Image (cartoon, chains in turn green, brown):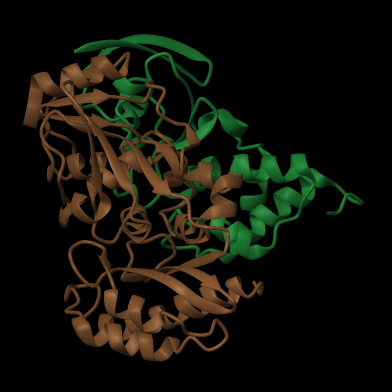
Length: 164
Length: 289
């Protein structure tokens, strides 16, 4: 067992973990963050994407012991229980989810992309949006609604008039 | 599934990492991004008894050393997109990076990891063979340089000895009058390649003066195509007989036959990828995008 300290969504905990425990399992079981979904457990579906020190990372391909001292964000950090983040709202209005299993992974993959586009003031074409989400698999809604949601969140962030 | 048990060691310096790898020998594996090793561990296809975490070591420089571009083992795939030296000297390399996994994988996966894992469909091993790169490996006792063509022994098998790890990959910088391209086919964006072909051409007076070609999917390791390389010599850039080159290469190989594609399909795919790679490289040499 190895003692590690993790800061997750603003909560800091020191805990003792077996080296083989995946970050995804520790977030779900020790931090009770069940928004971290595990799909394939080998890096093919993107469901378990979280942010480690601000960068998207697959928590099924990460051992919790590797994250000692790291800052982790999960989908729960985005818009609270009512999902008020602009990308979450756009997923709702553009039908970007159906069963919702893949949604936390899509959101955590795409929020930095949306933020970057808004920050540099650029509207990406659909192909670029599809490339940004190519590591995430959805098996029910399909991808059109998700692309539309990303486009809407970027449009909302840029506001009217600012075009690039 | 979840991994079998192992002991975890966080290396604080390269010497520390090499000492740990030496101490635990075949039981130990270095871990960087974990994008290949952890899936293998989750499926229990790999069961290392000791993991040596090298993520905090300073092995991520991309720099010119003499006539070589030296890329530190911990360089993440995403670092190449905005790198001026890659864009200027290594167009085939840059093309290839776009085919590696997905954005999240590219942000975390490292060149040392990809080279050491030696997946037969992976892009960076193919790029290393294409460019006659040197794989620089270290153990506690010594440093060795291994030619890429000798480093990849079989699928997932390399020339690395227990106690050794890749510390850098060095690519000879091609002359200014050169061009390249890399094309890949996979069933889904970012998925494992069904096959890929890379080309580097040196040219003079509108003709090909030297050619290198690599192919993944034709065997268990990336292979060069000497018949195509000699076929291309002295060809005009605006008429390189690319289709013929594809036919010549396809006739000389015995491609992998698996659940992704039959050997016959791969053979015709590789012929077509060869044509496209040559035509794109020639077009770039002529200054067309």
